[in-house]
Image 1: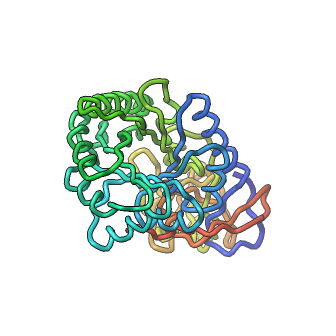
Image 2 (image 1 turned 90 degrees about the vertical axis):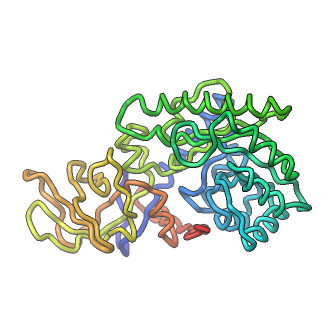
Length: 363
């Protein structure tokens, strides 16, 4: 990560636009070379300018996690959205889904007969047909039906007048220190989507879209049943991706600029960046609550709302009071969701500020 601009008011999320653009271009090129459709997950950036960059380089649309995230990006001009989540539509959300279906090309995930029926009722008669993808579990043990049950849910979606175009999954078990975790998860996703497609085929339904992918498994794509990928974190990367080997330090595009507010001991200092900026994530495969590029052997040992306590090895000299340092968050999605804007830099100078248009869109 490059030098920070002078005179920053901290804490603030800073993005190196050259690294960002390189990350976006690399993923677009990899998808194109492998003949995968790319539908990146926007929950990692929630930003119109980044969405525009992804679409300009060939993304066929964007994935989102919530209705409100979809609404925010639709207002920003994105007109092809996949809510990769099994929505449970109450009356208010049903009205919102219908409005959204009239405005954009909309796909929605389903993983139950009841959920499919509710979705069908909500969007019946919309200006554009709403597409449905059945979510299957490929080993993450989160949402999604067993692949063999995909046909049952798809049949209910058809009965609800939805256009069932395929199946999707999330290989979240690809995260981990184990060097083979991402490889195994990628193969699990292929097997699950292929089995799910067969389940749909038994009902005479063609699974035109077999959608998978995550940032850790992106480097393990193979030609086969999967034809669409939905990585998200790759635009910025984070300390978690660095720890599991998905990226290098040269690929870290976002950091939290933080000021040293206290130096209570020669090998310990405190930053003004706490959990309300960095988020609380601490996965088993990361050390501490974030990564400091200027002090790679440091550990953020404790995190409060507005404090980050950093411990250094005994022989390492730390920063002085008032110095501004970078902290790469463990998991970038939460900090972005907490921020109003991203400060955009190039070669150590501020060049722009981009609004996080989908900030806090959690419903």
